[in-house]
Length: 135
Image (cartoon, rainbow, N blue to C red; front, side):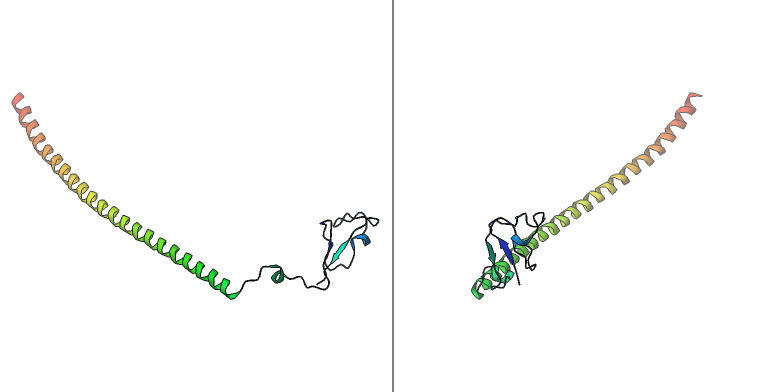
């Protein structure tokens, strides 16, 4: 792979085969003029590859990274399981409380309904007798 880089930090077009001095002065890619004294670093001999630029890791390091990642995942899974169990316990408690309150509500509704019926019976009978007495 052909790559050329200007020492001024302005990259030349890889694969174009043009030195920075060969390009026109109005070039967008490189503003270097033909008369400038520019040293060009030529990397034709070495193949530039992302794998050669990244740090090499041996099997021990990769094994250690894999072990650490596995431990982190196991800890996270355990934490998620514990929080799920806590949520399930909370749901059960809320459900029990709901059922209890629903039962108490039903009891109070029945009690109030009976009181209303009793007051209608006693109230209507009492009104008739008091209205009859007044006549």
